Image (cartoon, rainbow, N blue to C red; front, side, top):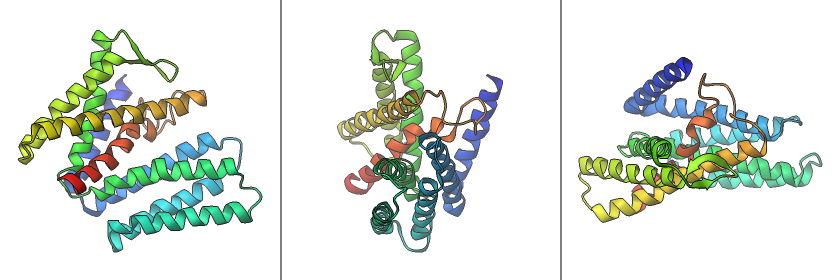
Length: 256
């Protein structure tokens, strides 16, 4: 428990600091987080194989997105993804050791970890990057405590036995409250608009958590790794954020 508290406090302070400072430091920290997450998921999915192909192409994708955004702009992401998918298809056709299963797992890691996480870098230096934390961690916190005190009906018992319907409702309600307050601070006063957005993105946060839980349950593990003492791996702490960041990014760009 002590290790969990210390790691959580230091990790939260680090993330808050680099988010406040922004710039290249923020990008480098999230690039590092992405690379570690690639390693964790690749090692799990390809535990009985040489996972150099799966890991290397996704390391390259993460670096390519980082440098494309840094030297050009974030709109280049579509072009980078096109090249990434095309290269993977070419490797699949020309290399007999790359099966359809390995190709699918590689593309899954690239989309789920690399592309989704890259939206944090796309939100860098904006006031909405804090909204990702508020929604992801706010939903998780409210869901936990609501579930502890009021949880009776299982939400998805075969995937995550401890999660309850009451907890999910409490997480979404807490997220709505926090988001309304934050939008008020930003001067966005459309309450109905905010509530609809909050419910939608909070639900995505819960789905992100359940997705990670299903992956772990299928492979019979408790955590993705042990990078964070008391918390498990990087993916164990950022699974909800992975789903929230893209939704926030596109909401901000198309609706605000």
